[in-house]
Image (cartoon, rainbow, N blue to C red):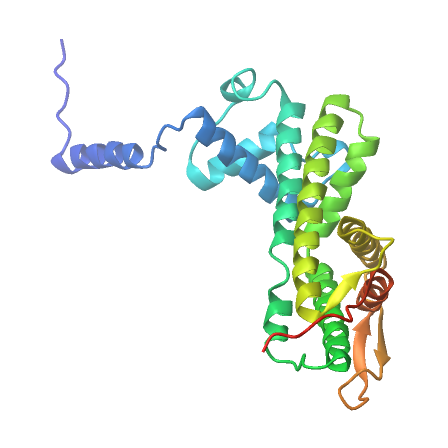
Length: 278
C-alpha cells in the first residue's frame, strides 16, 4: 500500500486556518421568537425600500431569506418557518403588514414636540395673542407635516396597506390588517384627543357644545390622510401666502395647515372664564 505523501507545514496550517475561519462566521442559533422578529423586520425593510407590489408579490419568503443570509450568513428555509412560526407565506405577509400599521400609529404618537417648543416662545397673555399662537401652531405643524409626508416612504406604504384591507384577495390577511388598523386608529385618536385637550387648556379654548374631542380628532386624522393621499398622487405640496405674521407680514401656509386652522375654529371657541397661569 502506497504511503500518503505528507503535506508541507504551510499547507496544513492553511487548512486549519480555513476551518477556523469558516467556523468563526457561523451564525448563532436563534430561538423561534428571535427568528420571527428578525424576518418580520427584514420584510418591513424590504417594503420600505421597494414599496408594496400588487398582492404583496414582492414580499416572499425567498426574497426575505436571501436578504437575511446576505446580511447575517444565516440560511433560512421554508421548512424552518412553515408550520413552525407561520402557517404559510400569507400568514407571514400579514405579520409584516400589521407591523407597518403599528409603525404608523407610533409615528403619530411622536408628533407634537414642535408645538410644545413653540408655546414656550410666544406671548399668551391676552385672548388676541392666544388666537395668534393657535394660528401659528396650525401653520408650523401643518407645514412641517406636509414637508415630512413629501419626503416619506411611510405614507405610500401605509396607503397600500389600507387598500389591502378592503380589496385584498385573502380574507384572513384582510381580517388581520383591519384589526390592526382599528387598533392603530384608536391609538392615534387617543393621542390626538389627549394632545389637543392639553393644548386647548393652555390656550383657553373649549369645545363647542355640539362636539366631542374624539370627533375633532377623527376629523383631523381623516383630513390629514386625505391631504397626504392627494399630495402623494400629485407629487406636490400645495402652498399659499397669507398675511398672518405678527405685523401682517406674508407667511407661507400649506393647504393642510389652512384646513387644520379651519377645523380648530369649527370645533373650539375661546373660554370666557379662562385665566392664564402666571
